Length: 298
Image (cartoon, rainbow, N blue to C red; front, side, top):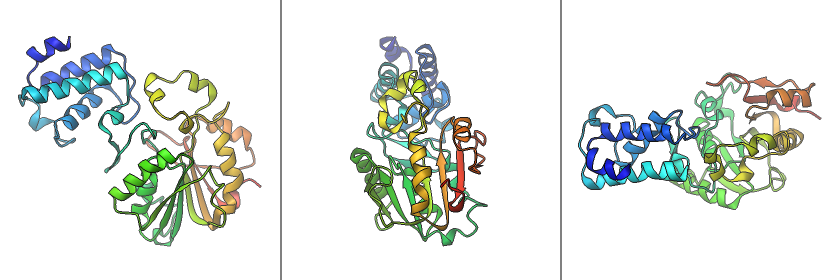
């Protein structure tokens, strides 16, 4: 099939059609930045050809050199045979207008909290200039810490993770955005190495996949660090620790914002007296909760 493609496919339109057909035939899973085979194929082709990611139309009928054709077919074939998320093939992931370096030391960024930071957490944060200290707990690639630095320009931020490998990626991204003077990457198992620190805002996209779901994840997820995904039988092990400990690290008017995947019902059953505020995202209001410091369980 790929041997034929080299002799019969000549334009970006040809290769795009071929990629979509082959991705659908291979029954690939799309959940790491693209929602379907077409979007994934467009991204991989334009990225490989060093073309603007938002401008397919002007180039759609451009003929490729033999070297360009070979590079595009190679990344299409890798996506099919390796079943790696596209972000690991390109070492790039996007959250809104921001792009980040990623590799298999970190999960591919895909947090709904990124959407909420675009509006500086309005209306929960009345004056963004008053956010002076913040933490991104379970930072991974550092993407949310970097977005917080842009949303709250007066803040200093701790980007915290248990994984030294993840923190190496986070440090690379922090340096890329020239934020070393405001974002500090800290190795800590949740709060264990943070004694004496306090924050106006804590956000976290912790591990939250339950044991049953871990057993049936699509192949693409198996390339991500398991400890960044799994969180006990019900997916709430990390969230329980956060709820138990966060008040010690929040200032009096501090806010806690946590993403928990599909665990809203389970969480509310476990904490029936806790007044969670569920924040509206593009996927609905069941994935991210907010609590004020005085609302945290005691």
